[in-house]
Amino acid sequence: MADWIERWKETSSAAERSIAAAGDLDALEKERVAWLGRSGKLNLLMKELPALPEDRRRAWGGPANQDKNRIVGLLEERKESFERAALEGALTKAEIDPTLPPPPPSRGRLHPLTLALDEMISILARLGFSWAEGPNAETEYYNFEALNIPAEHPARDTQDTFFLKTREGSPGLLMRTHTSPVQIRRMESARPPIRIIAPGRVFRHEAVDASHSAVFHQIEGLYVDKNVSMADLKGTLDTFLQCLFGSQTKTRFRPSNFPFTEPSAEVDISCILCGGSGCAACKRSGWMEILGCGLVHPNVFKAVDYNPELWSGFAFGLGVERIAMLKLGVTDIRMFYENDVRFLEQWG
Ligand code: PHE
Image (cartoon, rainbow, N blue to C red):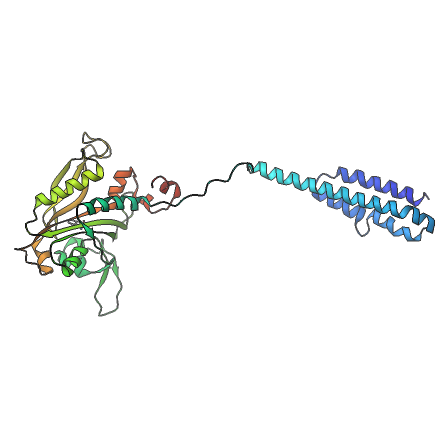
């Protein structure tokens, strides 16, 4: 039998060759077990060492141990290089360029509806209107009755109104279908002259589509004083709409009907896209419908104990989403509520 040291050298160089040939981390682990594991070949040889004559043991023990450590080192080196390659592979596959600076942190900004609301409110504030608000959950009295909407009026149809469950005996509540109840609340708690706007949420039991949402926003306007006329209403709205859409904007008042105003009108503006010549956005009419308004109905004054012979006023109500859509060129109202950052990022 060959000298122990010969067998050691042969085994260790065989180990070196197979370690170099191992193709991946798994193969490498098998090599470690085969040579250095509990019954690995190098380990078994090591166990023979104590049985050798003392002079050989002394001569060979040291160098063999160093050699074993060298093999351990080779295994480590290969392992690291496989791991590095795996990481680099993952980085290239994911197309990560670690030398690029990180993307800038995204900044918060105001919601497009808030921007539109703020702009409209600030114009109206300059025209002398001050802020008022009322509850979203209203009584039938404020939402309908006091606004001259009798029980059998179609606006009361359960189709349009969300009614709330209330305890028996307490007054029925509903989600307000418009901001007009704030007119009543303000007139009850103040004396003329009154000049308020009431921005806020309104609720309608409707199917949601590109131009309808069950929850949307309105701005209510109310002016009450002596001798308020249609001319005051028209002057105020003309100024407001020209500030909002540009000084070239023309307005058109069409007769309409609201229970709480008499006379009533719907207001159109000249199309903000084509200027009035007719395009797809205004359905070739040159006009876009923008809000409802009128002079406060005598029955509304009676409901709040104002003498209709003495006081007069105008009111208007506009849809915030509708105006924001026109101004921003948004064609689907649902975009405002979906919180898609790619949409929201475009303004503010
Ligand atoms: N409240 C009405 C609506 O929601 C709008 C309006 C307000 C009309 C004030 C006239 C006066 O349709």
